[in-house]
Image (tube, rainbow, N blue to C red; front, side, top):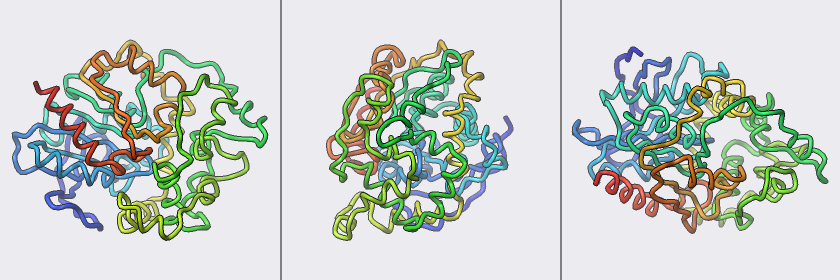
Length: 375
């Protein structure tokens, strides 16, 4: 893997003090845009932060300066297909497969002249990438913090056809799973050209998946069945005839609620809406296509015996359905998929966007974990 030159490149939105923006060629076909803090001292241990959907490196804006203040070099890329990251094959579906996103992270570490990082931290879809990094390259990714999406292990063999979609369609009213909607040909245009406008769509989407929305009362699901899945909110198990903008529009917060949202004011939400207005959603959604199709699992079968053997912990919001959306995944992570799981933390006052909704608590847990691992 050959690493190209590093190019300075500012972003078009304000950054916290001590955080800079630049573009790094990772030698894997991507010019990764990164935000970083604590970069002046080359001897600092590095922490890599990987965002999920529909987010950006900017999602770590409240974490980067805190890690830097405690002696770390904190690095957050816009993952392939997002924000200011450029890749020649962004719209080639296979380039968004998990194995390639792991190679993106590995290439970035090499481009930063690092042989290893103290921790890889992933949220949402980024949690799966972080888990793969830690499971396959533990000598590089020395510990892992997974957020919102638990790691139940690597795929072991081709799965038999899933009948869940036919079962969901038979419910009254008929339903569909959001991941398969995100994998559909129409989802990207539905969201980019939504009738309410991108800013309002993303406001409703972030709101409905946060602790601010009173409908989030997550609980473990007994089975992967239509009846159990249908107990989740509509942004997970959607009406069959609705798209995502229509799904969340029904829960659009009012002006007073928006003004009271300190964790994501309109000026910060606009960073996301302007980014997706520029890039669209298709490249990012290709990651879901890779997962739901199962077409790219074969290259992982050789590693099916691998678990996360480095120290790890799990963080999520207490109002987040993410830990429970795949029945048994949280338990599998605790019982077998992570041999050194040092904690499972469900934070009150946070939904899915845990590092944005409860940044102080997340920062405290991250620093405690890093110090514990170092000792």
